[in-house]
View 1 (cartoon, rainbow, N blue to C red):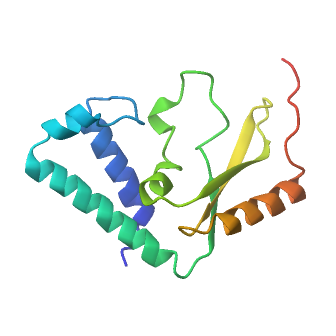
View 2: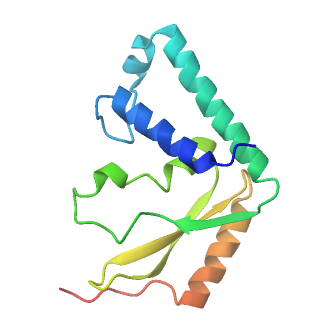
View 3: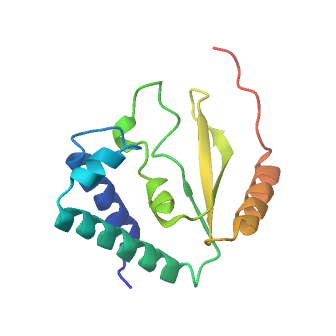
Length: 147
């Protein structure tokens, strides 16, 4: 198995973002754009995606839960941080793995910081159970102070 699975996912994200001309990270290819891709290009994208998904499924045979950040830092102001918005979440969207996000703290400025719990495919129960345990241990959601 390739050692840098998440790095490959990030490279895949960047390539799709660049190929989409900087389109919204959640909408790289509309159905019309997908149909406009050259056959070889669409086949290669699907093959890369399938290879990445296969690698992650293989990795998850030895791991029940992945605990990771949801973002590279605290929540940014609206409209900021778009270039890194999906760095930590996209790999699991590409693989179809269940994810739960719970609050894990606040920045010095009081902005929320989340932790992402990723489970095996079709094991939402494990991801939710782990999230519940983490949330209970940390204290769960707290209303932010008004600025």
